Amino acid sequence: MAAEDKHFGSETVRDMQVALDLAWSSLSPEEQSQSSKTLLATRILNAAEAGERSPARLLLLALMSARPPSSCYSKTADSL
Image (tube, rainbow, N blue to C red; front, side):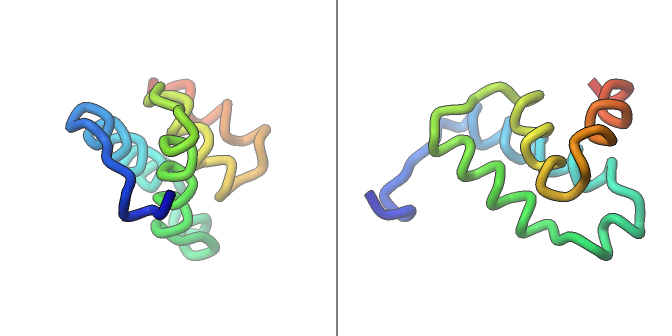
């Protein structure tokens, strides 16, 4: 199924947007310069297409694409 054939409910779209915004804002300026918001969004979209709906998991998956896993858990725990 092509990406344009995918449809998400409004709650899922909102959760994906929140996860993206939190992921991007939790990155330091240096991390932002070494990553891209598009990469984070793609990671979130792919996870949602695979059935993931937990905003916290979407956030962690996005951060894992931008940082080493050990730093994802320590910096996002305060955000959740």
